Image (cartoon, helix red, strand yellow):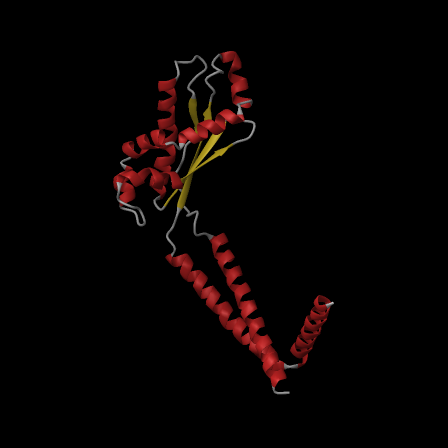
Length: 236
């Protein structure tokens, strides 16, 4: 009963607040004043974030991975179209393992290149951790394709890293398996290219920031209107 009584109390108060908004211009002015200033601040803040946020570029490479069990030419089509998802998942973890990425770090001299970038620790032991955070490996369902996306403030370096990972993984596979008749175990189908536009921030990020700021402005304006109503009620 107490809960129902509280609901009626809140319902009556909200109805009174709505009536006050309809007939009391100072309450509207209180809402619009706070909402307008907060909205302009949100717009300015969104533009500043777009201007000051560090640019991050993404490059992706797509390559085909063949299972070692499917090595004959007659089984090649099955290897392309019915690759075992469990095998690909296991290989995706190997691709981002220290053994594979260590070759990428050494071949591209990433300790020096990443060390020159902001927010990167200078210890060589941290290079793998830093590089691993830049990489995202995706599996394409019902195919033998893997996609690697690399994000970095330098678009050219992001593309170089993305293309170097399949090369390092191919060398690892050739060391582990005997030569096969059906072709290379790893074949790059779509090499990475340097991105021209940043992946972050972008227009979607800007409008998300603006929407969040406008929502905060609306809540601030509503709070100002509520305070105005309560202040008015206190003097009546």
